[in-house]
Image (cartoon, rainbow, N blue to C red; front, side):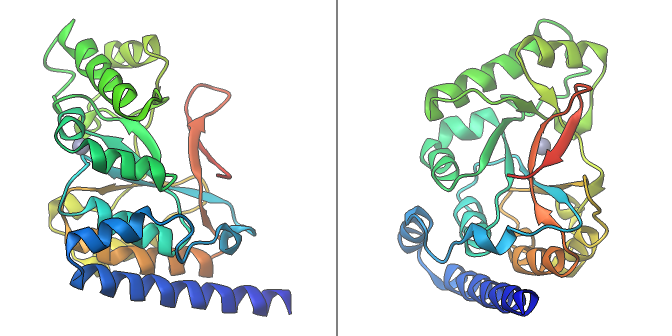
Length: 246
Ligand SMILES: [Zn+2]
C-alpha cells in the first residue's frame, strides 16, 4: 500500500514536472522567473524520502545562462530534485540574479573556474587564480563559499588538485557523460542517465541546451523507477567525492 501510494505520488510529480516543462517552454521569462522563485511551488522532498538503491549526483556545468538556468530550476523543482551547479565565474558576474535563483531554489553551488580555462596548460599562478577568482565571485554574490570544484574539460593534474585543496575545495569529475555538450538529443541524454548506479555522477550543462532541460522529467522518473534518488555530492573520508542523501 505504501508502495502504491508512493508510486502514485511519483506519477503525480512526473505529471507536474511535464506540465512545468510545457509552461516553461511557452512562458515569457518574467513568468518563468516568478515560478522558479516561488518557494514550495509543485515541490516536495517527500517524493525522494525512500531510496532503496542509493543516490546519484546530477550536475550542470557552465552556467548561469539566461537561455536555460530558469527552465532547469523549474524542471528540477517540479520533480522535487536538487542538483549541483558548477559555476563559470564570468557568467555569474554577468548574471548574478540567476546564480541567486539557483541558491534560492536550494541547488548546490560549486566552482568551475573564472573563465573556463585549460588549467593544466596555463601554468601557475594562473591556474590557482582561475579557481580563486571564481571562488571570490560566488562568495560575493551568494554569501557562501563553494566546497566543490570541477576543472573545465575534466583536465586536472597534481598541481590543479593542490590548488583546489588549498582553497578548501574537493575535486569532482564524473562517471557518466550525457554528451549534451556534443549534440546529444533528449532521448540520448535520458539513456545516458539510465546507466547511473548508486554513487554515479552525471555530467550535464546549464549551457542553453533545450535538450538538457527537456530530459529532466524523464531522468527523474527513470531514477524513481529504479529506486535511485538525486543526492548531494560531498567530500568522502578519503578526500574524493561521494554522493549522499541531500
Ligand atoms: Zn565546463
